[in-house]
Image 1 (cartoon, rainbow, N blue to C red):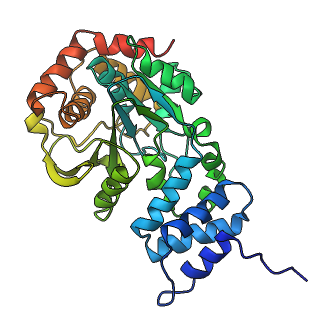
Image 2 (image 1 turned 45 degrees about the vertical axis):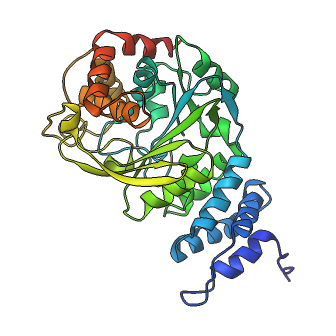
Length: 355
């Protein structure tokens, strides 16, 4: 005979959120936080953890539930402070891309060369999508993608470098340990959005977030959460495949958040001097997206070769510089980034990051 389950924080949370369409109840911030802390401790039953995540998704998470989970994730994250006035955390989808080549892996180097230190974060691969990730692209280019948070911080502090990549297995290993469980769950839990708001490095001054979304309900949630966990600002983009880069050929709705304000805005590529007929950087005809081809396209763009990859780097970096107040207008920001790339500064900065 099986002994009855102990009334742990996770068990009590499941009793509230997994009781059906009309009887399920919302958790308080503290209840969600305690349940997530139990899961991250490694002491939770994986079946119960899966039930918790799926029940929350079916019920639809509240702001308090999301914040409680996010605070737990941050508490299990090693965090360092960088000696810089401004820092951008670039958070692409952890499950990667399978329709567009993620040349945004080169954005941190372009931003650093343009005057804004930047860090991207992610994992090597994540189910159920298993798309091409920044980790795969940077590793293919020859970069060490297994830096500790202190080592990545040292790179950010280096005035000749100013950019880094941080993998979840080193920043938040307790969350990374749930990767297999998440794959078996089939459907993405709220962690897929919340992990992108983790702050492994913060600036001594202002830490900014650039993050993408797909579903219309998410931007205000992401912006509000960014405010709650200490980001000075957030640029929330309706991007390709949920990423940080909008389409290159038409305007996209986006959101900008600061400590006490959230406003909508429209990102129009023509405001940045971009005129493209394609939505993004596509793989070769009848070919799949690969890290190898993405590296080839990214290096060509850093060498100044015109095309969607070049325009993607200009667009992605320029909108960020403008949003963070480092350039007065979109077109000035775009012209600045073009000059940084065409002068060879961005490519040199990227290559220094491979050493």
